[in-house]
Length: 81
Image (cartoon, rainbow, N blue to C red; front, top):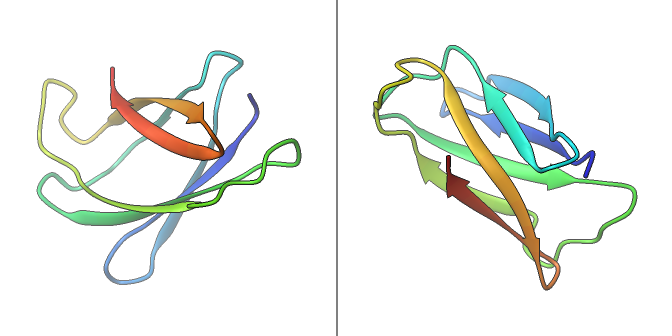
C-alpha cells in the first residue's frame, strides 16, 4: 500500500510510519490512554476523510501501537491486529 501515516499527540509531537504491502504498520513509544490524531497520505490514493481521532488503550503490546490499515471507498479504517 505504501501509505504514509502521521500520529500526532495532544502536545503536537508527531511520529510517522509507512504501511507494508498488506497494510500493516506500527508506532512505538505510544502512551496508553492518550488521544491521538492519525492522518493518511499516499500518491496513489485520495482519502475523503484523511484524518481520524483515536484513543490508544493499553494492551499486550504496552507502548507499541500495532494496527492494520484498510482502504474502503476512499476512506481509511484502522483495525485492531
